[in-house]
Length: 146
Image (cartoon, rainbow, N blue to C red):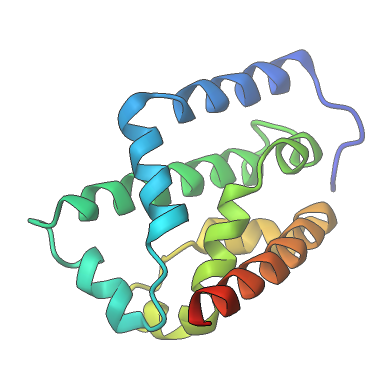
């Protein structure tokens, strides 16, 4: 069940998550994963995800595991779902970005963005945020193809 009011402890977690996102390497990783990395197939995703010598591999893992950790905090009741969704969109952008070939990725990596997916399936606010991000990502994908 979703809570209506967040606690001061929830706010502290949200602020800490934000602070972690501002670390220099994390900023670089987020800029690349969210802004530059636009795979169109599972194979393109795995060309980075399975290529450990590629410097982008570490960035991809850092960003994906960060958002999965954050989603897990919500799922385990450590932070209010409504507050989390109100303050964060990137995890939903990632899920939307990989949505066209999510099943193919999960064919090799069944845990891929599984916590973020569970968040979307469990909380109405997360579902709504994801649907908004899905539309934005689809528009971005179309502009990149043009």
